[in-house]
Image (cartoon, rainbow, N blue to C red; front, side, top):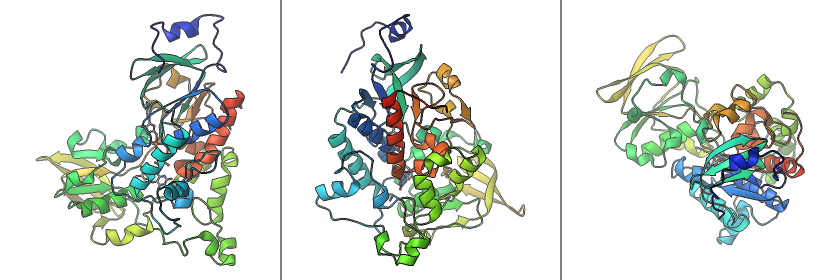
Length: 425
Ligand SMILES: Cc1cc2nc3c(=O)[nH]c(=O)nc-3n(C[C@H](O)[C@H](O)[C@H](O)COP(=O)(O)OP(=O)(O)OC[C@H]3O[C@@H](n4cnc5c(N)ncnc54)[C@H](O)[C@@H]3O)c2cc1C
């Protein structure tokens, strides 16, 4: 691994008429989740010099609960690469496991093993180290690693995922001491709550699956849902979409996001979505595949109380426990006491929270509602700085929230990085 020369990279970048041009320096990919791995694989195929950093699939084993199942079906859970032989089904075949269809919920442990297998075969050069800081110096990027090594990069791809964007409702900020409240992304092992009353805030997959896992681990969860009802998906009619009757396939064609023309449009229309008005894109992001639980969760929720149509008016701590003041649409109030409040409140993109980007660099990025404005090639208003994964979903649509979007994103992004050209964000 290259060592720090002791000669400040910022100094080198700032030298007028310096030898560095963005094209000669490596492109740096930060993050080795599905989007970082796919970007790196496509960069590698394009022959672009690159350095890729991160622990493979870290978010999946550190920030998601053990024992969870993926909501996406196997056909929509492969990490993209230009070469064949690296799909989830190839991994399963390599492990002596047979093919699986839409009725097979993928255990998170299988997805983690698949991601690591992909990395070992497709990206052995991955540097399993954290990037500490990125600064913008005279059109280049000064990258500092946790080890202290510093180097210059011509391009930087932020594939740092959703964890920095974990969302806490503002009305709860500071209302409870840290040990009484936490976001779901902070938990790998929910069995630590065994025997405790846990109020779970939210009505999406994360809330419902956390509640089921808490219940199965001997905790006493109560779900607090703002919506008047809690939705679950339906089990797929057939294991393979092609086995559905032809008229059904025409009315509701299959896609990586599930059957239906609107889902097909979101899967293939990212380039068009980018041109829609901002409000429409944000609505698409929140409403397509809105909050609901996977079909296999429904029976596991039978014994779990769900308080529907309730919001938290105020929260406080009393005798080391949580006291939640809940209110419904008619203004009826009730108090819920719990030992812990688990926030299954999702993620909201906000560039301001990406602490590894120097504050001056963050200020240079043009945003809307905290979201980076991106070109058709995923480049931000700072030339050479790219965002992929969830940070790009408000621009290109909901498929970017899922592994299924890795192909769309990596192809476009890598074309832009390799060409060194850019279109206006
Ligand atoms: C509970 C839950 C269930 C989900 N279920 C599904 C599902 O069923 N199907 C699906 O398609 N999607 C699912 N998702 C969404 C899924 O997480 C994303 O699709 C996917 O992880 C996005 O990949 P990514 O590479 O953008 O982000 P991540 O997987 O989050 O990877 C980002 C990586 O960047 C690394 N990183 C961050 N900062 C640095 C740094 N400074 N230096 C080096 N590395 C860094 C992190 O360690 C992390 O490994 C789920 C998400 C959650 C929270």
